[in-house]
Length: 160
Image 1 (spheres, helix red, strand yellow):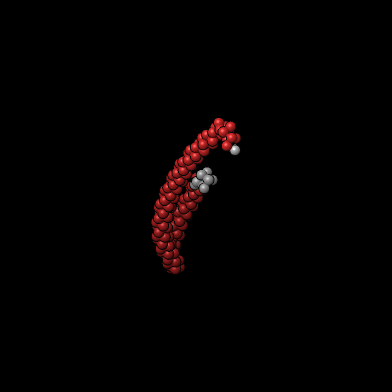
Image 2: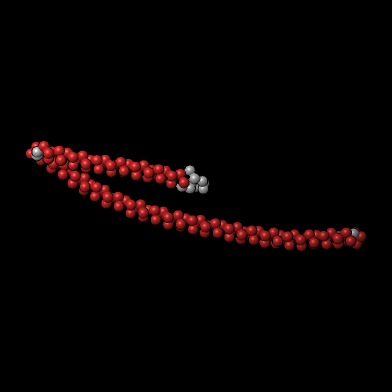
């Protein structure tokens, strides 16, 4: 066996040298790949963190805008309730005035009846004009609402 080793010592030494070089290269390559993987992992973690922070910022901005819109809606609702209360008070007053005029009609002269009818027609005309104005405003608001809904971004980033 020793004779065989002495006879083939050069090829065996070359094979041992090749194996040593291969193992050294493998070890260096593995550590290089490992460091590349670690660098990739670090970059990915940084990108995920940045995306998470950006998403958190967008969500906070959205919540702020939502809170502002909610506060504005509550304010408008309070104003609307006040306007409705005022309109109801005016309605009750007008109804009471018309009831009083109706009770007094039998005792009134013909001229007084005409004046009462003219005043009632004027009030009715004013009410009809305001009703038409309210209907026109409602139609404009519906058109504006539809435009806002159509322009509102969806989850995909496209408008409807």
